[in-house]
Image 1 (spheres, one colour):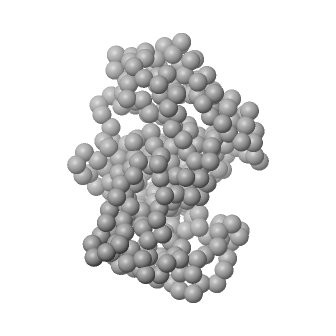
Image 2 (cartoon, one colour):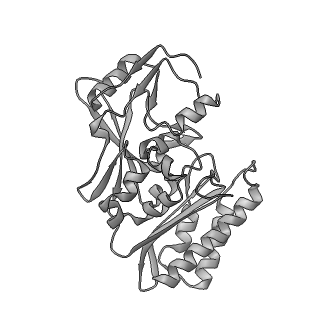
Image 3 (tube, one colour):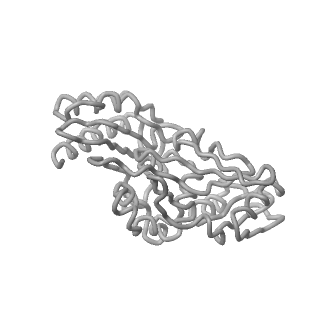
Length: 290
């Protein structure tokens, strides 16, 4: 951890992005559940200015807007799990939250922080991708606030690296309200699934009607430098009946589609086996219970 030259705590979104533009090198602090342990371990070096964004009201709250649910960047995992809009429309995020660290971390860690940390094993990233999430990015390059949107899979470029510009702030994540008949599952596998970084994670969602699976989305975590969409697995499932043959074929394609590394948490071979087995189990569960 290096010494800081400056500390700022803006109280509005506009003030924050103006300061980002003016100050240049800035480290953003939200919940601190990733930043502080990484800084203390020497894996992250603070930039010249530390910006505490926790006092910005525009980054809070969960609302329904134009067929989407907007979750502010400062919403904690615990707040997200308890919110009625999430409970009604996005139960997959409740399932993911149940596997997210401890209750203490869920009450401090933010959705925006988990996204911007850009870990290949980030616990909310796979379920958010399955739900078709996009990120809302804000800057002020001239006299007016500029907002742009980006599909979540495009936001990640590598471990800890995103397409967030230096003078830009992630303000929210937006999710379309799932269509009728949408079902989804998320599974994270690790030594202690809630408290450990995942060895693999997998999310599958789609509309199941008359036994036919459509509008399929598949995402994998901890098998590549970023969370990834399982496009080949999606294609194997799209428009198909979830019978034993379809499930077996999709599980094999999922296994072949991922290209993980070996590290202290698991070997590449083991990760591929787990992707195969978890894909099969998730699809069998969806077929049996809907």
